[in-house]
Image 1 (cartoon, rainbow, N blue to C red):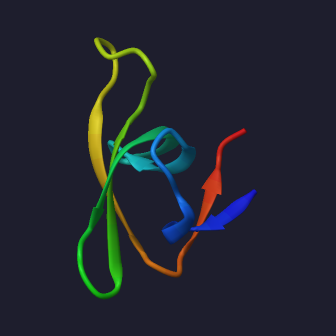
Image 2 (cartoon, rainbow, N blue to C red):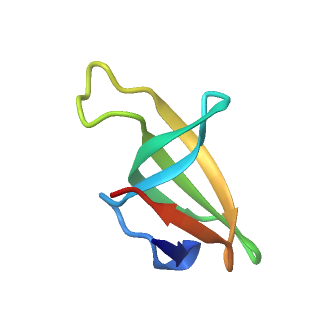
Length: 68
């Protein structure tokens, strides 16, 4: 299912490029970066010790795949 980047919330699982590959990520923080871009802090796992933390950016109106 796809939703607009503006509709994402903390805890959503999304499909995004992290660490140079497409993978499931969990939204940890949302930063309002400006006029057209929204920035998210995401991790690649629910386990704190084994997760990598990354920053992903989307255009506000971009459609983002929710992971099921």
